[in-house]
Amino acid sequence: METFEEKVFFLKQLIELAKIDGILHDKEIDFLSLIAEDFGIDKTTYYKLYTDEIEKVQVNFTDRIIQLYRLILVMQCDGNWHEKEVNKINEIGLLMGLDPNGIAILLAKVKADGTKDITPEFMIKTFFNQLN
Image 1 (cartoon, one colour):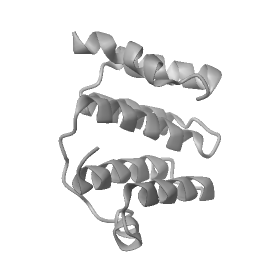
Image 2: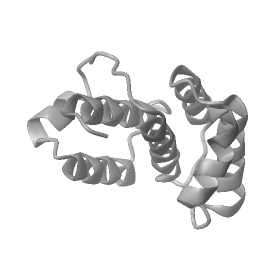
Image 3: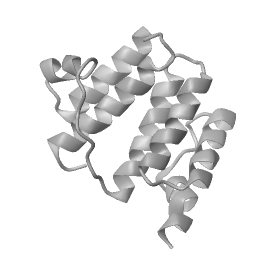
């Protein structure tokens, strides 16, 4: 991820996912705040993302896969896999041009085993076919 606009766009996606089940949990807010800090997004910009609309940004393939994984991490913050969250992750993944089979494999792996075995190698293998 290179530009500030990309970081803001990704954070907005994460916030929208956290809000989709109608409950914004403290763990989700804490996680999102940490991501904003890691991205170098100031508090004013961060809080505005909860209400403001932003423009869509084009990002590279690797960053799209990383963002998909971040979305899954946000979904897991509250300990529930809400159907609306899963649907939204699938929708965002498809809008980002990611392979639906890769998305399904990643979701199934995280649901079954948690995030401990999700390595860069696993991610590359999961989405490699899409590059061919």
